[in-house]
Length: 218
View: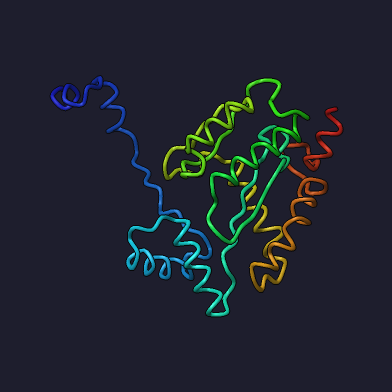
């Protein structure tokens, strides 16, 4: 134990604590559409290993349209961790670009603060995608008064508020509609977001909707 601890540069008590803990391995992260999409994605990646996720997404959507199957819709949103309001959002059938992220930053700050800069520094938490970690995005965040923070790699559940909203969107909205194709989803999204903000009761807000909570707080 001592040799191992010295080699790793940690205390023996730390090492002992780690070895005595019950091992709990997390299973693979899966989504409902995995069985449909993953084989097609793997084929595309094998055929074009130099392509990034945006080009693979574009090829996948093109393939799905050719087969008469719905294309993949990617939704980008800004949620307030305190009142759960979706301050701003956008959607695309292509990959999420840095420009989309930066545009959303500007819209979110203007709507929440009525200005092009936050009145106090605000943390902006996102994953580690290239659109979020780009230098241009970092510069934009600084100009807007946002402080960038990122979830650990392959640990999206660490951003639990966003993950909970995604589950709500799928459970309470998407599953109750016939979603024949991507254009149908695009048409429905504005009403879903409005309903979530204005009507959807949230247990963490004393069962008020985000905007009801905001109005009462004001």
